[in-house]
Image 1 (cartoon, rainbow, N blue to C red):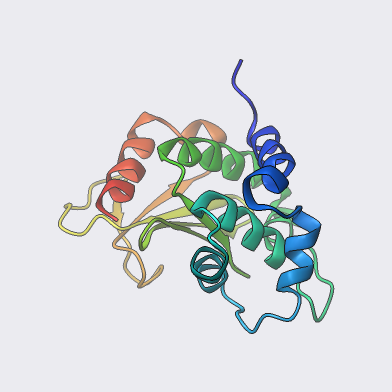
Image 2: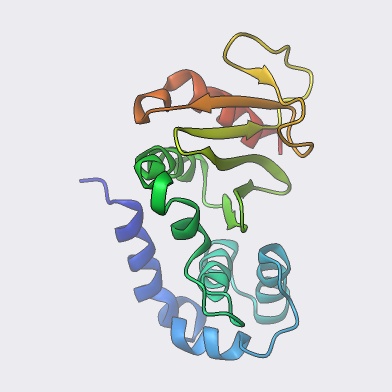
Length: 186
């Protein structure tokens, strides 16, 4: 039976001591004084300086950045999908579940206003734009826009296209194919 993303993450956390020599708490303590503030920088540091594989480095970095160390703010994703936007969380969760199946090298990097999806470079982003809509920005340079896959325009300069989602069912095979194409090209 397939595991949920939460169960998979917990399994990785449970395996950290065996695979890396330290528990999550020990890794977080080791990173407490780090000067790196960006997800990718922390992943690179863990991989190059400690020999941690990409998947585990991504997990450790995500947990390290999950709380703003200066203000104690909650996880950026929880903040993005809180309050009036809480009803959009199932859309986000469905997107993440689909994207995590692309490969072990997917990097999910929450920012203050959106979530960056990276491999070697950013291939997409997810943003709760309004209380009724999640926007998915996708890097598909050279792909002509259409009725659903629109040009990003002023939405975000880091992506070439945007898809607007208003319900969980909008995370369909067509959207997953565009995301997979962008992932494969990154």
